[in-house]
Structure formats: structure tokens, C-alpha cells
Length: 252
Image 1 (cartoon, rainbow, N blue to C red):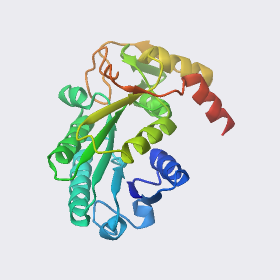
Image 2 (cartoon, rainbow, N blue to C red; image 1 turned 30 degrees about the horizontal axis):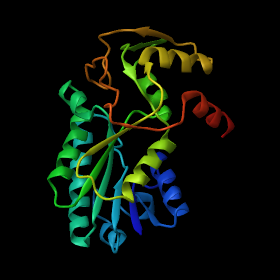
Image 3 (cartoon, one colour; image 1 turned 60 degrees about the horizontal axis):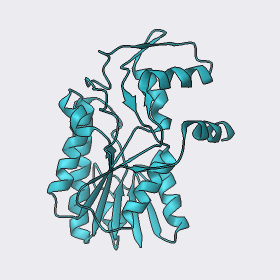
């Protein structure tokens, strides 16, 4: 089966392409550096010829609300139109657990992600949206975003992160199955307090920054509640634990 992966050269996309190839599918890594640009439409029709499934794991290069909104609206609209013209039977999109709540709580980036999901749900292409919890690989970015000088201020809320390799596996499983026409959620096996998790990971890397639990701290512009970053009870739980991921990274 031909499966086109938008963002197929990135963190999750490259793992997804490799996984699909291993299972005998024709996986196409579609990205500007492979000649496919969903913002301009360049190479899109050619890439989607005879494709059964498109998996979109691309992300806005900017987390700023207006820029992210422009990216997701333009890219997703172009992609869905090209899929309809090519007769693609399944659109899979990667999104984030808590998108709706975080959008309502003031995050411009998550408003942009919600707009993307709305476009997908209203289109005529059968779809599945995979909501993943945050990746272990993004903990450094979350920490840097919350840093002021040598102090990291984070709300002491729950988070249930997962490995990017498990996200890729979730996307692959979804891609080769029947369209859900709804959101499905995936998460890692461990639940942490966000401030405690970052404090632990900084200590493991001998990073001298101090982590303060601040209930008023925002998360990418959003006010968050205790369970904004955790999945529903029916989420699919993957196996990789933080300590296992740390070992993998150390050996890479």
C-alpha cells in the first residue's frame, strides 16, 4: 500500500517511514527537502498519485499563534484538496492530547491545531486524528520555554509523556487500519507531575537550573488544569518508560 507521510523527514516522520517500509508498504517521505511543499502545492499532486493513505505529521515552524494558524490552515487545506482529487481513502493527522482545552485556555498554537482538526473533520476525505501526549524528546523545549534566567517555572500538573518512536508506531497502526472518523488518543505508561519530571531530567543531565512549582505558570500561553496534559481513560498506552528512553538516548 502506498502511504505518503507529510513531514516524513522529521522526528516522527522518519521513524514512521522506516516502520512502514519494514512492514512492506510503499512509504513516501514528503517534505520540502524531498520536493513536496504543502504550503505552495509544489509536488503534491505527483506525490499523492495512487496513494491509499496520507499521514500528516508535519508541524508549524513557528509556535506563535498567527503564524501557526496560517501554516495549518494553508497546508491542511491544500493537502485535503489534493487528496480528494487523487482519490486518497484515508487522511491521518497527528495532533496533541488536550488540544481543545488548551486552545480554549488561551494558547494561540493550540487554537491553530484545533483549526487544523476542524478542517479535517469537515472535509470529504475519511480521516483519523491521533492525539498523542507530549514526547520525551520535547521535554527540553518545554523546559526552555518556561525558563527565566536560571529558574524554570512550571505548573505542578500531571503529564503522561511518550517516546517519539511509540508515536510513530501509533500513527502506523492507525494508517493501515480503517478510518475512524474521530479522535483516538495515545500516551506513555507513566504519569508525572510536570515540575517534578523536569526537575528529575535536569538533575540527570547536571543542568543547574532551579525548577519552581508555580500553579499560575502557563503552558505555551495556556492556563492549564491538573489534567490538561493527560489522556482519556480509553487511550492506548504504549510501553516505553522514561528510564528506558533515557538509556536509548544515552546509547545513540
